[in-house]
Amino acid sequence: MRGLSFEEVFALLAAVQLSGANLVQLQQWLACIAHPAECIALIEAAAAGRPCPHCGGARKHRCGQASGLQRFRCLACRRSHNALTGTPLARLRKKECWLSYLLCVLESRTVRDAARVVGVDPTTSFRWRHRFVPGAMRERPTTLNAVVEADETYLLESRKGSRKLTRPARKRGGVAKRRGINGEHDCLLVARDRSGQTLDFHTGRGAVTAAQLRHCLEPVLPADALLISDGALAYRRFAADAGITHEWVNVKGGERARGAIHVQNVNGWHSRFKSWLVRFRGVASPYLIHYSGWQRLLDARRLTTPAHLLCAAARRRKTVELPN
Ligand SMILES: [Zn+2]
Image (cartoon, rainbow, N blue to C red; front, side):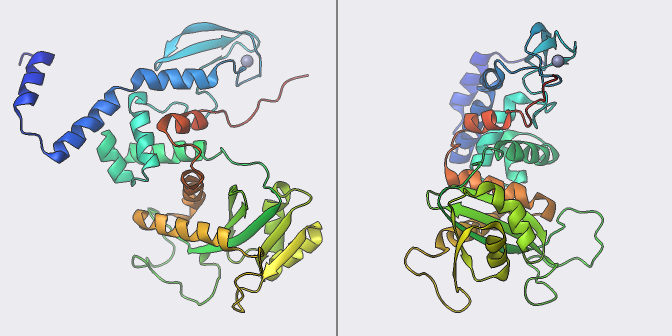
């Protein structure tokens, strides 16, 4: 069959009665095809002036193009690289769909939904989610300020998607076998300062320990921080050991606040996270930190466009150690 010209397609389209759903589909398709050059330009701009990811060398020359990106050869180590080498996005295909996909990330769409909107396979959608989200969520504060609330929330461990289940499967929305917090629960520790800066840590299974608190919190608390928690012994122990000023609220005893001493900001974050999570119908434990990082990005409202997310994800993970 002879291919149709644009004029013919346009005439056909103009003659069709478009439903609301048709219009949405068309708009999404247009958004998708409008982006390829923009996406490449953003990636190249994010990487401009970067040294060689293999050896840190600054001198390089251009050597052709691959997958739409400029390729460089390093004059020091002779190896080649492009703007995405060494980032979580290296070797992912279909760049023309990335910005539309990132819009789905901002809209918190499920894997299947995003696959349908962008026109990729669900396995691609899944792979992209777990590259783009961890890439972008590295955008996080290095230290918190002054008054810091810390509290953990627990989620029943999940092996969603696992092919090697070593226990009987739970029904959807299952319950733990034993009461209380135990090895069946994943612990998500969240620390939030009063300016809204937030950090999240998946500390593993079971109740958080003083050693885990020290590992996660000590590097991010300033020396003059005031740490506020509930009455759990682990916080008191950690604060005493690390020499951090600490106040605690007897939440279990019904105390909510003593003036400015409360953990309501961090608890608010927990409840927003849990209600946001409902749409995904459970997340597998190994990916829990991706979801909390995702929610942290959305909640902070700093990266608000697909381009912001792309630039954050295209940033390189490690700085290269320079040879002496
Ligand atoms: Zn090099």
